Length: 91
Image 1 (cartoon, rainbow, N blue to C red):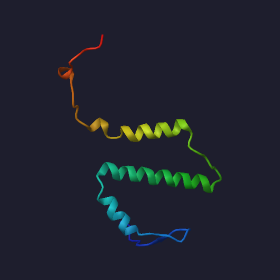
Image 2: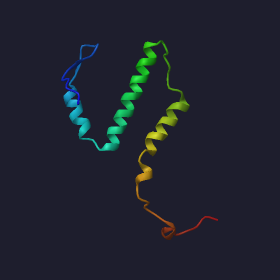
Image 3: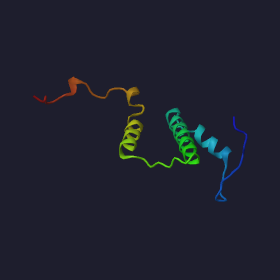
Image 4: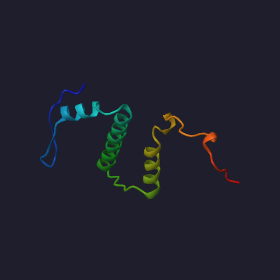
């Protein structure tokens, strides 16, 4: 558990880490994983920037990430419809 209560940002603002942790703990597990994924992404991006690799999102990489995020958790959802629900069949 992180025991830091305050982290100063370079722009003079502050982040209350305890408050952030409380908010994250209140999220469903799937959302907590999204937060973790985003934090890891930001860490990778920061590392690349420190090393001089300034890259922008390409359309392809952004679309791939977007689709991955949109589809996350769908495989766990129950099916709402089956063939018995069909009124008309495409031929």
